[in-house]
Length: 350
Image (cartoon, rainbow, N blue to C red; front, top):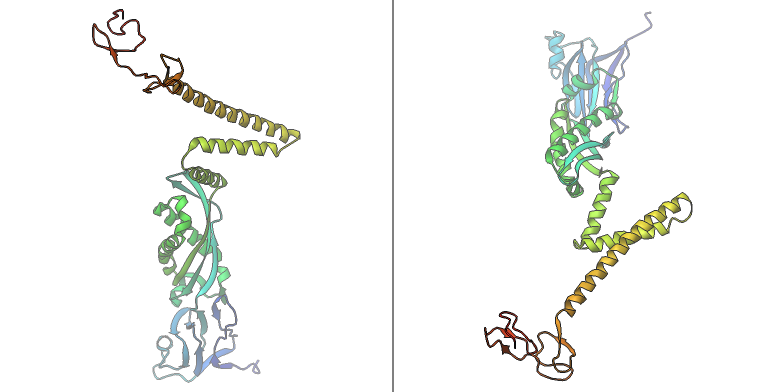
């Protein structure tokens, strides 16, 4: 097949028009070879690597590079080109995107169990976003993409999500932040999780640039407990007023459920709530009666007109007679009432 001639590559470059391609292998057929003096163009936010005989050889940063023995030291050594090369050679060219890949979403597939100081054992969920970039292209190639033709962020989503969720679980557990305080500490938690994850990303040649915690969800039961605690706080800790408020709400809910089984259930709730409120009102009335009785017990009668007057009154408010007349028992000297017939201490007849 003599008509099949070799194709000599004079210019190698990658014009990236995607947003999620991390690694791109320059397309080369079995007939393609790199000629001496080939121009390798590496655009900004790119790194190019030459792979020959299954080994990572020379790495090039952004700029224009002319492939000669002077700037291909590893391949030159492997090929034993002591005095330069004239014939074309075969090698694979990989372009690695070193830009920041943003808007990568993460979230807990299931709830995370925490021990909270206020609510005991609590299950929470979380979600957010993060961004990363390649900082060590050879290490990333060895650890992750190998010799795949193309490698995008879609290939790493599940792997990264598991790493981020694991790091978040460890960080939130060690921080021991109460559930009620988590919404006010999103920024601090995000920074803690980012620092925890940095080692895991560094091991594969990546850097986690930013991580954002957007939301932490808690069970509905905990939300109701928080709402009740907030309602109690609105009453300034007055439990009796809070109980009356809850009773009134129960009666209102029962009234909004007429008819059918729901209506009967509502009536039951309403009856129970009504009895509770009735009991509360009866207790309030009894307390009022006790106050009235105690006030009545602090009155006495005027010795002249027999009108009700306060025990500490000096004059009758009805007839104006003097009430507090100091008298003493002639036998023991004990103070006695003016109308007393016997001394309350010694029993002497007065």
